[in-house]
Length: 136
Image (cartoon, rainbow, N blue to C red; front, side):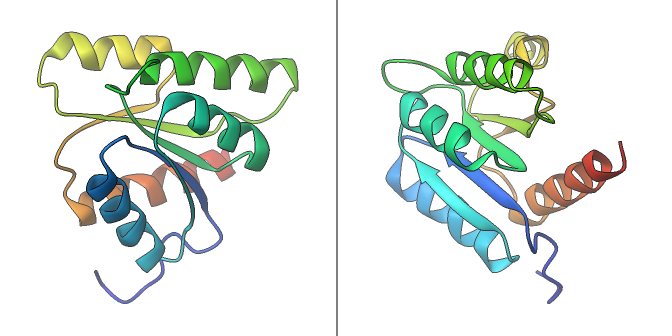
């Protein structure tokens, strides 16, 4: 990291069922100034996103019970119903199949990233996406 807090004043909901991955993602984002709300499954992630109206939702696609596609549908429905600016949504997955990337974008994610996420690339993506959201 370069010493600048690239995610200062940015709220991120991280939805990841693997505890060590969730903690690692949260640490990377917090080290860049983000306020992180971590969730272990889609339902918890939806509740967190509806409660805090985050700038960014970073969501694993393979989650227990309900997947990341369920989460993004619920989030987008709520944003439309409440006329709220959409959160930047990033799907993160171990899947390398192009069909997952296409489906994630089609279902409402803005970005797609394969695991393991390289920290600097992830932070740059989020910082750029949040800046573009503020302008647009």
